[in-house]
Image (cartoon, rainbow, N blue to C red):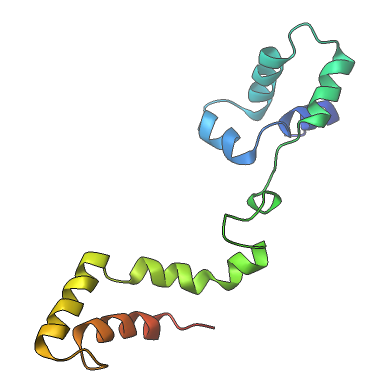
Length: 129
């Protein structure tokens, strides 16, 4: 399915994720473009509408957006993937606190305790590059 230059301009007013979330494959791309035009064009002339489309291009890939908060760049995001993976793998904070409590109670608040071994298991399974 080839799109005209005009259709390409209209299509770029959708963020890629919005297009797929909103339409779930129920409409063809050309139908979706026609719906977009019908909903936006109103009383605009063709020239005004095309200018609007050119001035309202949405990011077409995730990397065209700024990186998530707390990251300086997408390279920084990529470099800290291990930290996000570790975070998802650590025991829940309540379980960590329970392990700490028992380690204090048992006198094993060192590298032989439950808390240390649980955290160490994650760090070993997901090493820092």
